[in-house]
Length: 85
Image (cartoon, rainbow, N blue to C red; front, side, top):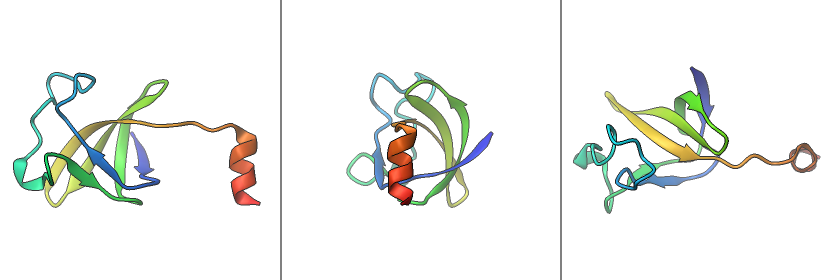
């Protein structure tokens, strides 16, 4: 597992077809806002699988462990370097 941190706010929807069937639609309703789970910039989690464009991540909300499938964007090294200059 790898520790991860969100780089921007995200509203996670667990009812789409790209979410694994075992996880689809199983989000605790008390955590949802307008049918989506709000995740905030800098929110920590644990990535346990990384594909080419997606990652499987556990987030924790209070005492609840929330699995999620998130898309991520990789950027070229020169673009990352420009951000640091």
